[in-house]
Image (cartoon, rainbow, N blue to C red; front, side, top):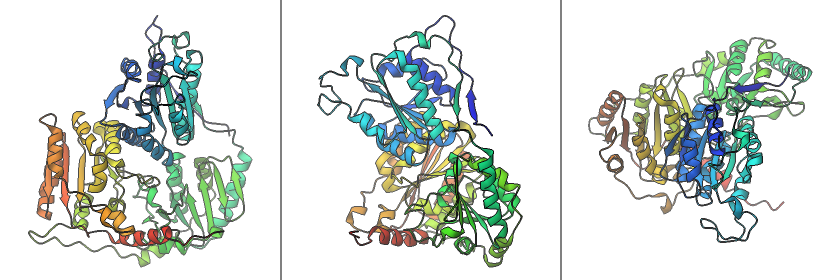
Length: 582
């Protein structure tokens, strides 16, 4: 079994014309699937932006600030597979870096373009604007080394083509962000290396994989799984990185085991799988799911990330001796054997042919599972409850939707939504940066176009961090539906540790969005206080198919999911462990 290669056909150059570094970058972006670059202009990147605009395949999407431009590139990458943003030197770079760090933690390929200083300033003692006022202005580069998998500075055109291709290849192969800084005086300069059609862009997916290692891993795993009485499968978030979701689903169909997903894997596998049993999230799992998973005598975890959040403060009742852990390029069995240089999808395809069908765990689940009761309609004039809100959001979902959940109680309420086949789901669980959802919604909706209608659930505290770029959604004609959950503060923090700092100043959110609209574009807003209001708002939003729809839902400050209450107390306990001086 050899290495695999992704090949993309190049865009043709106009005959007889010599290209520039900026236009070469634009062409490479288009080849890998990026047609929109999220930008904030600054004097160091203006010529680079001109060159990007010169390519008919590239559109610049102006954002209100660099942080949101980075979040938008994050959301775009979740839809298209790769995203890009372009900012100016240091003041822009250090503003966008939090979003880049989030993309790194979430394994998203992202190209961060920075317009850098004049090439003649490197190696001098010049003090430049937009810097710390020191002769050494390399701070931005050094910061990005910690949150990207490759960093290049284009300060000489002789090797620019090689550096750009190396960085883009690293982003795609490692599924991480990269940093590409282009000196402001070079962005529009022609060079012979850009004058002809480039070699089709290709990425070799790893080293040569040996069939014998794959066969040994499959043999060892199948032996344990076939001997187990009630084995289960659990999907993790790195299925997406490994592009192994289809292979995992084929394994699930072949083996007949109960199939669960970790919370950060929601949207990575179909919830219509015949033996799907819900989310495995320790004590805040779907009904009966943790009991089935933790009582199994063998569990295969596909691409898991066990952090303090996904493990509910390290409280999962799992035994390593019973586990088979499959990562994108490695299989570990129990506490012993480990097999490297194995592609996850190849492992699942081969294992599906060796595993014996066993439906015991799913049969046990069916015996104990009690379907949730029907939520009563609220009385006329009664303040709306969170449970009622999400009952109606559930009824809205179709294969043409994708749900984005902001950090907070939306994590837990959206986790309980049953996604129709084809309905997407995104949230930022590893990094958990409040404010992520506004920019990510912008980016995802731009990438998806009319193919998907994004439904975003955002808490008021998070919204206040990045609200400005709802104006950008209106500007570019997005038809997203945003539910703004107004409960007066940082509810997720309240349940971990309460204090007066968790209370925020209330805004007139619908009024703010109407001010953003300012008579330009298509917008629908509604302020919801009762279930009847919500029904009216959703009905109108579904008819306003070409408008941005912003629905503010007024909730009681103490109206939280039971899962958040349990999760918050356990995370607080983990955070508050006494110091161990060892």
